[in-house]
Length: 103
Image (cartoon, rainbow, N blue to C red; front, side):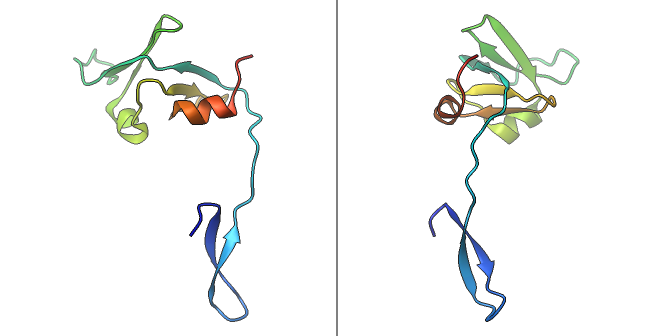
C-alpha cells in the first residue's frame, strides 16, 4: 500500500479500504542546528547527559541522554531541533532543509 494511505474499515460491509492521509504544510518556527559531530557514551558528568551533539557551524554543542540517542538515532549532517514548547528531536537533513528556511 502506498505511504499516502492508511487502512480503515468500511462501515457498510466491514471490509478494509484505503483512506487517503490529509496533507499538511509546516508553518512552525523552530530553533535548530546542523549536527557536525557526535561523541557518544563518553564519561557521564553527573547530569545523566553522557552524549554530545556537536554543532560546528555555530560553534556549540548539546549534551543529551542515552534515551534521546536511542529514540532519535541522530546522524551527522542532520539537525537537532527545539520546538517552541521545549520538545527536542532529530530531523534528517533532507527533510529539515525541504521544510524549513533560516530566518
